Length: 216
Image 1 (cartoon, rainbow, N blue to C red):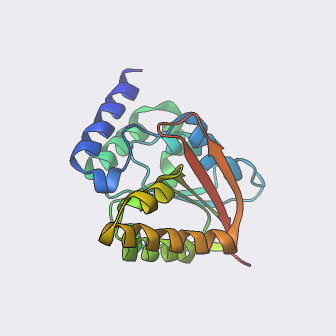
Image 2: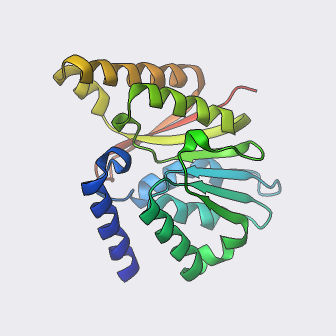
Image 3: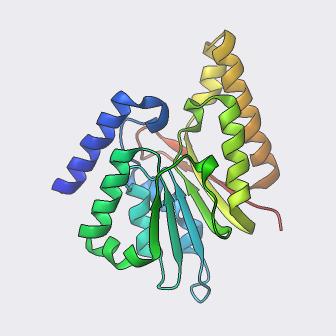
């Protein structure tokens, strides 16, 4: 309980000082985490998989992932925020469930578009706040998701409900151009590759989880 409270305080502190890369006032709920990992949970347990989590923050979704890993799986995490990276390392050192997955888990501190994996992933799970980024960066990140994903692999990411539609209605000028371009990029990928969208009402704020599959 004390560790969880400390992580929430750290998350809120990063939200206040680095909103553009944190993007939320609270860590993801367990309901959101369950949805984000639902395809991993349904995988064939007899086949080892490679899992990539992007933007894990303090680890609310990571906690669900480590509980689903099997001994021969590979788990990589890419996180830019140095305070979050330290929290993740601490959790792998101190929390029982995380410690069992430590040997197969590697944390990388760098922007995801600069990450060069040794092999593609069966599952890419992203918590990046895409609506906060420049439109050009969102396009690069979306392409990176699919570059890192195996053919037939699943990408799961979340976005807060109705943020882009509302911003498109109430903003003007450069901000409206930015959010419209982001919407066009993400909608194009969803139209082509989406296999499911989950509505997560028990989260702050409520969120959609988008599940996309890379073409074979």
